[in-house]
Length: 454
Picture 1 (cartoon, rainbow, N blue to C red):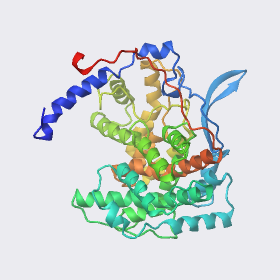
Picture 2 (cartoon, rainbow, N blue to C red; picture 1 turned 90 degrees about the horizontal axis):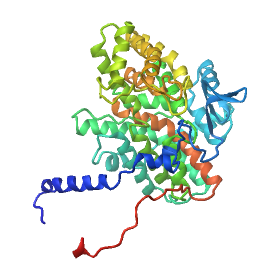
Picture 3 (cartoon, rainbow, N blue to C red; picture 1 turned 180 degrees about the vertical axis):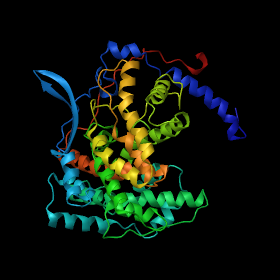
Picture 4 (tube, rainbow, N blue to C red; picture 1 turned 90 degrees about the vertical axis):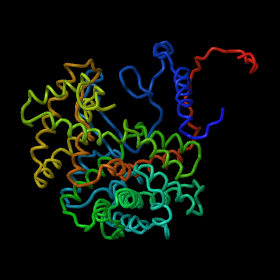
């Protein structure tokens, strides 16, 4: 059968897709029969132990009288409580992302001389190859900045004379370059897209060496390069809170899996970007923002608990928003009673909402965060507690910072590249076997039939 136009192939492809779905469907009962830990989690949602790490620790349980009991969530970077880290650099009126990156990579907090030197190294690497913006970023700009970011990362391989060298000094050099360049790749990719697809003016601002990562994001993104101290401080806190979250989250585990094969740094980080792009991972905060946009159309009084509860129940009953039956931003794979990142963020979110004249919206967010766990507990059978996670607030923060939705997930990547880099190095230092979990085949054996007999 010949096709004159590609459109004529669509019915054939759709029919093949149905056949594909039919022969790829696994009976859910078989997972129970063979005790398969779907998603590498047990029946209670606890992750299967697949590795050891010194980089970060996520805590949601403690032992009380010999019984594992839910507790307020804790997050440690290299053994240091994230709350202490944020409290420390805020008290000293410093930016914290560079210090946090140093801690994650090298396992200890830097002194002033080490921090100054490290910041200068990052500033020195914050330069793209000649004509990279023109030849790579501005050619075929994508509507999805995560794809643009991944493509740029893979293309940087071609500019690296030692791209395949996986010795630790070389990998560290590559990681430092990527940490420094991620803000530029993301912002420039967005500027190119809005210019060619939306007809907007094109702004390519050069980063300033004396500015922090958070400041440079705002400086290069905004047409006038202006920002307030509060805006830069809160974006910096967001980067710190998103920089790392244990070895078991999907994109970091991807980094470990791909790195264990011995591949190059650019391929490993591009794979992690592909994971983070997924709406179940890095795209959650956009869903929260859209959910609240819909919520505001149905709730007239942001302090009316009855209206809020009615809308939340409608969400769970698949009667509101995207009818998925979810309250986005609520709950976490690990945390139950609280997400420490959300707790840290909340006070700064309130501060920013006051400065931006959006305190009323913050009231709505606060009420939903307080009421949603109660509604979920009444409507769902859950195995652990539910609380607001960091994504619940981050989208609201980014909207108040006038960051475009297209950059919400890339901002996550700009932060998480620090954690990915630390985990890649850890995997290579502790080189072992390639990561290869087992899958059990449940297909019946069949004879091969000649073509004429099928």
